Amino acid sequence: SRTVARGEDGALSVGGVDVRELAGRFGTPLYVVDEEDMRARAAAFRDSFTAAFGRHGARVDVYYASKAFLSSKVARWMRAEDLCMDVASGGELELALRGGMPASRIGLHGNNKSDAELRRALEVGVGRIIVDSFTEIETLDAIAREMGKVAPVLVRVTTGVHAGGHEYIATSHEDQKFGLSLAAGAAFEALVECHDAAGLDLRGIHTHIGSQILSLAAFQESAERMLGLRAAFRAEVGVDLPEVDLGGGYAIRYTPHGEELTPADAATGMAEAVAAAVEKVGGTWPHLSIEPGRAIAGPAGLTLYRVGVVKRVGLDEGGERQYVAVDGGMSDNMRTITYGAEYTATVASRLSTVEPVLSRVVGKHCESGDIVVRDVDLPHDVARGDLLAVPATGAYGRVMASNYNSVLRPAVVAVRDGEAELLVRRDTLEDLFSWDVAPD
Ligand code: LLP
Image (cartoon, rainbow, N blue to C red; front, side, top):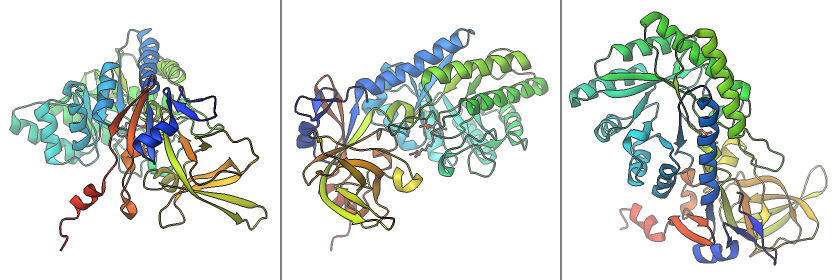
């Protein structure tokens, strides 16, 4: 995050707070969120997209994809930055509401929403429900009519744009669970069904091509296909769908050699693509929306660990590797073991000037795949008691954390202007015991 700095004695501070103080006060592992940075990233999407699309007289809403990281305070920040919010479950919906996000600014996602989730969304009056299947269209229509309501919906479209990225987070191939196929005509058919359903108010179309995507061309291609679908619907049904949501997925820099797709570049490029498509297919400009999650929360967060054990291991190909075991691991960062994600790490509690050696940061869990950072150069004097910082863990960290090996999930603390504020408290042993209901 942008407020990370080394103090005179070589220790890191974030948001003006020394990491040693944070570790002392809140314990480790600890997720640290730089409030100013996270809000600035939200504002950058809002401003870049508003400017780029505003040039054409089009409106853009930015939905923060709260699956990346959510607490009620985060909902409050996003509201203050004039963002809307994407929620993917009943739980995220309740947290967003608890944080004061108006229901009308919330979009509900999910490929398999329960009746209870759909009912609750209608009851509180969410701004839109993104429908993902024919089953859902029928179910939601019936529930809405029974409740005497009309559900505002977008249809989730699988555009077939292949944008790269890990298989588990790519969402626009035909052979995956999300959306309705553009190529096979299912998306069009779903639009007609929604248009005809008395319990549904068809507002537009939605797509999300995947996550950690660097290719602007992929976003442009997706925008073009979506506008093509909108034009086809107009040609057939005579209605210009008011809204087009182009999803999230903007790549961030996880390591010094990593690359990112900035809000400014994404906004300019996507506005150009939409302008070209509108020019080509005719009709009015749609009201656009996007759903960045990772790019708002990810770079604003880091994880602080305490080093416990350091080991040297000989490598088959010669040389050796330093294994640095920290007090967390796959329970607080699932991304390395799940997607082979890359991170970096640095000694945070002091400045070491000794020679760095090939290292691997591992956790304390009972499996060898429990790796936080696969390859990183760390000083050869790193030792028990040092604090290690792993940057860019603000997204899909705490929200994917588990209690594997009955560990206590870490706290999340927000820092700003020299102050620290707890957002999510650490689990306690009492929490563990409270889930264990039959002690005798
Ligand atoms: N909109 C929809 C409909 C989505 O499914 C997602 C992410 C987003 C927006 C936000 O994407 P983002 O801007 O954060 O890339 N656990 C994985 C990421 C899963 C993303 C799922 N959907 C990870 O740790 O990389």
